[in-house]
Image 1 (cartoon, rainbow, N blue to C red):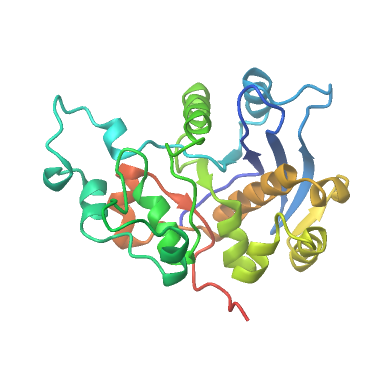
Image 2 (cartoon, helix red, strand yellow):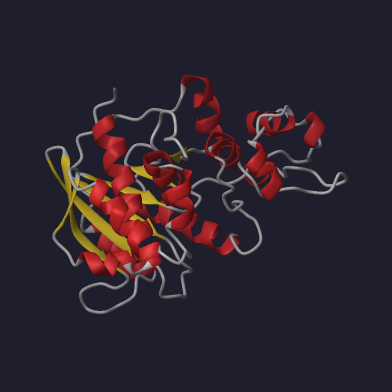
Length: 278
């Protein structure tokens, strides 16, 4: 188990750089318990988390902190490629492209139904998708947004800008991790609860039940109602809690996926078998 001696866990539900929907959560470690010290869409002065205020907020806490973003922190294989000419997908030697080409993204049937494409259409495109996104679909049945899919490109560009702006104080998979709140909730509570935590008739109650089940490890020094009633704040909290678990439990990339993760990126969620959906 790797030693990760961090005290502060910052979760960011990243919105557009010109919008007001970026939410931030800060958890402080107290032994094996995380205490929510801040969750919100604005700083104490009322300013939204545009780029400069967000960077300043994070830098103020960068000493022994882990930062978790729910947006892509790496780019698809074709976008990061430096070859002068493309050999074509079938001949490409890139590890991630080979993985996609050789059937790596085999997914559960429920995913195939959601992501069904016509027989003449490719199932994956290495210039918009990463292997880690398809792994998420295969392991948990969650179909994430493509890194450079429709409407996602600006968010990916912002996340990548933040990653570069925070270097060298935050390094990928050292104290900067990419997370998926829905994947964390799926792994902790099962598919049924994860599907109901947003845009559902009893969303507030589902979220409240989740926080109650985490009460032994997650406590609040801020107004809990604000977290329960706002999608972005709840996702930011889950992102921060994912970083906390990643550190205290010493999560590692599965041995058979390490080379792929190093080249293509990794989305972190609680390891192990998913809970029953029953």
